[in-house]
Amino acid sequence: MEVEAARRDAATLDPELLQLPELSPGALRENPVLAEELYAQWLALPETSKLVKSLIEDAKAGATLNVTGSSASTNATSSGSLPSMFPAGSAPPLSPRSTSGSPRVMRRGSGAGPSSLGSPLKLVSEPVREVIPQFYFKNGRPAPKDLKEQCLSRIDHLFFAGEGLQIQEFRSVTKDICKLPSFISTVLFKKIDAAGSGTVTRDAFVDYWINDNKITMDTASQIFEILRKPGYNYLTQEDFKPVLKELLSTHPGLEFLQGTPEFQERYAETVIYRIFYSINRAGNGHLTLRELKRGNLIAAMQQLDEEEDINKVLRYFSYEHFYVIYCKFWELDTDHDFLIDKENLIRYGNHSLTYRIVDRIFSQVPRKFTSMTEGKMGYEDFVYFILSEEDKSSEPSLEYWFKCIDLDGNGILTTTEMQFFYEEQLHRMECMAQEPVLFEDILCQMVDMIGPENECYFTLRDLKRCKLSGNIFNILFNLNKFMAFESRDPFLIRQERENPTLTEWDRFAHREYIRLSMEEDGEDASNGSGDLLLAESGWT
Image (cartoon, rainbow, N blue to C red; front, side, top):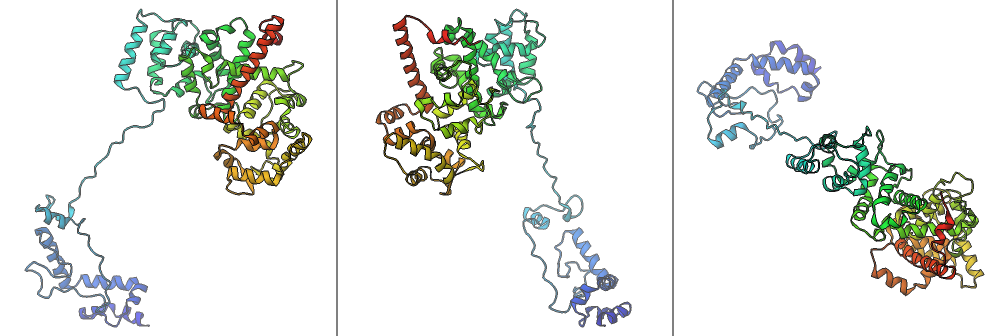
C-alpha cells in the first residue's frame, strides 16, 4: 500500500519531496518503474541541469571534478549538493578508485596537458599487435638459407658432370649429404627414381631432399619416410628386407655368408624379428614413427655403419646372437620341419620350464603364433620366446610373462595365480630331493623384493619399477634359474659388475656362443667335417 500511494503522487511531487524519507530502499528495488520516474524528474530540476553543465565545462577545462557534487567552476551553486535519492546515511558506498589506471592521475603525474581530442577522459593507448611466427608446417619446416646453400654446394660437387648418378655411385650421396647409414642407399635411390630409369638426377634429388624438406627432419623421421610405403603411416617387416639385403651384400663383417644365401635370409629374418620384438610395443606388426623414435634402432644402425666387426653391434645385428638363436631352435626342432611343439619346448634349457608355463605359451596368451599350424610354434614365435626367457629384465619380457601368469586377464597377479604355478616348482624340488621352500615363505620374499603398491597382488607397473622383477618369474616356473638365484653364484655377480652395460641377453648369448662354437670345433676335429650345422639345415 505504501508503494502504490507513492506511485500515484509521483507526478505531483514537489522537488523537496524527492528526498522521500519515508520510502524504503526495498520499495525502489521491487518497483524499478517508480525509480525511473523519480530519476527523470530529478534530471528535470533546474539545480540538476546547472550542475551537469558545470561538470561538463570543468571537464573541458581540465579542472578537477568533484564527485561529491561540488564544482570548481564559479557557475556552480554555493551549496553544490545533489538532491539525494536515499535517506540520510543509507546510501551504498562507492567502489574504491584505482590510482594506477586512472587517466587523470596519470596525466597529472606526468605533467602532460589535455588530450588533443579535447577531453582528458579519452586517453586510450593503441594495443600492441604481437606477430607470432609460424610454428606449424604441413610438409615440414623449410631449410634455413645457409643450410640450404651449404647442401646445394655439396650436391653440385657430387653431381659435377650434370648427369645423373647410378645406384652404385649413389652411396656417397646417402653417406656424405644425407648423413644416413650407407645400407639405406638402395632404398633411397629407388624412392627418388620412382620411374625406374636407373638414374637419379641432381634436380630430382634436390626436389626430394631439399624442396620436400627432408633435410630439416631428424634422422628417425628421414629413415621412416624413406622406408615406408606410400599411403602408410607405419612400417612393416617387409619394409626392412631391402635394408638387410644391402647390409648383407656390403658389410665386411658378413662377407663370410656370401656363399650361403639360405643363412643370409635367416639372419635377415632374425634381425627383423628382434627389431619388432623390442620396438613395436603395440605388438601389431605396425611400427610407427613414435615407436621408432623411442627405440634405439637408429643408434644401432649408425654404429653398424661405422663398425666393421658386426658382433660388436649387440643391438639387433650381432651375428653371434643370431647364431645362438638359430642353433637353440635347431636343437629343439628334432624333425627339422621348422616347427616346435610342446614336447620340444619342454626340453629347453635342460628341462628348466614347468609344464604349466609351457601350456600357457602354447595357449597363445602372451602372443599369437605366426606358424599357422595348430599346436606348433614357428621360428618367429621362438625368437620372441627366447628373448623373453633369457632377459626377463626387459619390458617386452615382463609383459610377455605377466600375460602368462595372469590367468583371468584382469591385469593383476594374485597370490592364487602365483601359487598355481609355484605348486609344480615345489613338486619338482621334492622329486630332486632338495629342501622345498613353502609358498608362504617365498611370497614374503617376493613382496619384499618388488615392494608393490598393494601387498595383496602385483601389477605390471609394480614389476616394471623393480630391477629384480625378472626373478619373480624364475621363482614361479624356471627351476634352474630359481636355484641359481638362491645360491647367488659369486662368479655371475662379479661378471655383472664388470660389465654393467650388458643385458642379461648379451651375457647369455656370449656364453652360449662360446659353448656352441666349442662343441662344433670338437665335432670338426673328430669327424673332419666343416660347417656341419649349416650343411645339415638346408633351409630354403
